[in-house]
Length: 317
Image (tube, rainbow, N blue to C red; front, side):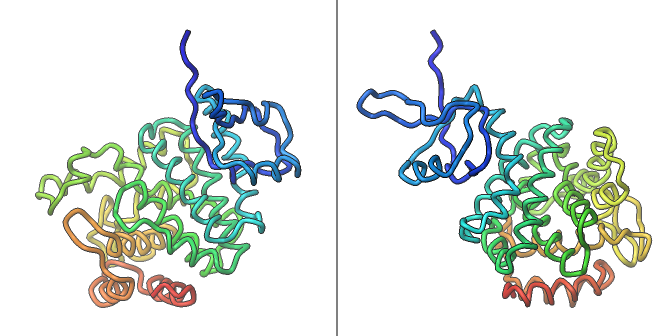
């Protein structure tokens, strides 16, 4: 008989007022086994939350992983709005969940479900940013300092949503902007892993391959049925340049959508301010100085200036 496997979960993700469709387990050290804490199809009430405070480690069966992930996605926004969870703790919880979701998306970007699972992440970032004045600072504190494609996508979405909100973008438009940002590097899933993670400068041939990622991401998005032009342009055009000469379509000025220009600024800032295999990170101040002094023909300077003001209000720079 196959032995059942268990996975430890974060008890803070079990939300009061919800109903679970998976079993929750505790370790029983005296019996060297697992015991049921809460059965599937049970409501999570106030008494349950009180008991959970006494619990050190909580588990699910690996067989019920899919139900658990669906539950977390469904209730992520409730967690973002929960004033009982300290802001920094809440920000970390949502960032960690976002990391899992983005890992799954990059491992299989052709899965519509994997891409759809990024929407609750975007919405929970929006909720925490709009409902908590200190949330942006907390999120920015935990943005990963090492550059990986997956964490870069999350960081860019946090900066983009914060900047979008600062610029007055609201409601559904802000959600769409967040989706464009979190999916902006989708095409890198089709670039050779050795090129993406090369320890050193890319050769001319390798850089030419890397330059294909916006068009590849755009193609994946179209194949998945994504039709919103703002998302599609954010994916395809975040490497275009204000004075032209960018890729893949050599657009310039107002021909580059507002969303692509916003994502372009946040993309550059995160790339400069995180550690790469071949370079140390720049400070926020150094990154912004370089963007202002050396990238005038590349980035939209009005958006760069708004980004600086936004970061200043959050104490980042």
